[in-house]
Length: 367
Image (cartoon, helix red, strand yellow):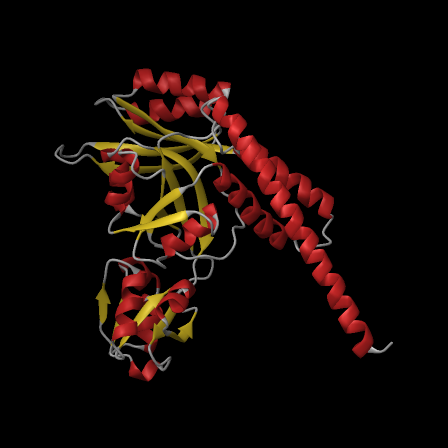
């Protein structure tokens, strides 16, 4: 077989396949717009989590492992989100500037075609979503090593929004600078959580170099781009965005370090079949009040995924509890349990029901 004769023939066939795929993508987009118009007539949401999960399951079954499964999901995630955004444009707020880890998480969840808006704080993300000026926000809520992101939890106590989705992303931190040479770095800047997540590496390898806490990893990358003696702990997206070089990759102290992000909006989606419900509860001032609430869930066989307490500002030694349950508020057993909790708790708020994050999300980082 003569490669010089056959390679052009194979490449021609690949080009033909690519053209056919593009033609089918355009056709799919047209049908998605038709679906969007029909949903608008019936006032239905453009996002149907159950339908999307069914698409992925069907595709993976039909694939039978021939094409890499992660690639199948990644490719069709972009296709599905692009078609959904063609029905209705989506604007997403995140903790800026551009190329923060939260921005990276937003792209993972909403795809490349959403309109992303960088804001200066997590509080501002909540505020803009509550006022309806931006449809969705994405915020970090907890890290597997450093724990809860308190500014996010406190914002749930302050603003009336709903949780619409979640995703968990493995964390990989990079030490970056202008030259890519660690010897040039005289100060290491980053957000407080990446600094904490890399403290042992920094202690062992850069013990004499001071650290500087800034409001975001992307801000640190910007500083490194403008000053040859500043290094930043930042994401790969920051490297591409701010034209800095990686001095050392993967400097996080623990493998398996993961951050959970929440998507916030003004309305939770319909059931997907694999959902989570979040509540904000305040207990009555009597012994055993918290145990009484938890007993309601246990008696009904409801799995408690998380519980986190936060002090109520201005009320000494008073707390609210963030609770995550497995199931959707429309599931009869969840609905019944929540009805009881509403009656026995001093404070009750349903924060939202939304599709559970997959345990094997693709690579990403935090904040």
